[in-house]
Image: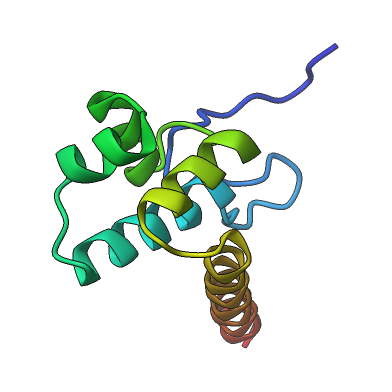
Length: 111
């Protein structure tokens, strides 16, 4: 039985128990996909065609509105000529950076 709910699509989602901001993996993955695509000067249409993923779905992935399956991530990474491990390393580094920022913010709030 659910005792707490929060809006999943809210980029500033907070844990019901702690009140701390949550880092949403789907958002960080989407940001990393978009960053890599734009670095290559590729359009959503180019990548969606090469990955055989609908344009709308890829757009939702990049905006952090959809969770990507491992198969879908592999297809998009293939279209971007980027190893999945490289994408996930970038995501991991960004999550770590955000965790540090949140921890510092919480420490500052205690003062």
